[in-house]
Image (cartoon, rainbow, N blue to C red; front, top):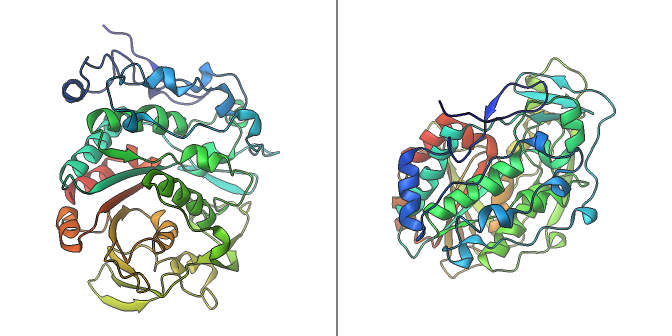
Length: 400
């Protein structure tokens, strides 16, 4: 019987680690063989956190080049190149809360902030990888397809030593995204442009890039992801100070309703209103259509728990954002979850129209939408937890 390998934090339950023998299913290897001329011996190892020394995950991780370049050395360079990471010594310090974490089931609270757990699931993650490849394959070759997997706050904001010393049972998000998901997508379908997000966010972990009381990022966090997208697309991002900033205090996010703890900090919602003559139409889950809505609404008068709704009207199945100052008929389609609401306002600075669908709520065909809209770019935004969620993967598969 083959030996099975696992990853886990001290004291946590087992999570399978992909290895040379218990990696993706055989059909995935066959697909990889079609792409890689020399054949792929194995996908990237999903390494055990405990194999690292305590301390910052960036400084203790092996360089990704040795893990990725050998299996995929026959891939074109454009499929493999990623921005050089910031040296560990130059990265800002992550948080080390002065108290032990409180377990809340699907998340924990530490130092006044909530942090979602992430559990890597090999089988479901492989299904996600294939779903992304198939989604890109369903579109015309003239359409650019961007994959953006968003890390949640735990691994970006907290020191590795705090997680291991407190036996936090949560998989390593950087390794999952940068060492497993992205290289696998590129190996199967090299036309997919994977956009690095973990390091760009880690470089700003001393800023207010995730909410304390909610599982999503702030709009500032979304802005750094937008800059990374612009780099991948080869365009100049709008400067942060070109947006009009407004703050709304007292936001209480989703962790409040899921917790009996009073230890969570309230948040301040910082909104960056886009320039130009922008507006939005959207259709809600009941099929009701709304026209001439604000891309970002004025938060004055909103209940503190509903301030997230100022960003592109919150979670809706279908939206169209338009900047009427742009008249070149440029268009993109964004396929997203809740994280995308903070991201899409920035895109109005580059496209005349931004078509947005929520993959868990939209029931029509994305390829048809791309054809009808004339979109040249499709951007898929999923948080890392969704890549191990079978329901999220099924929703994604159903619309492509």
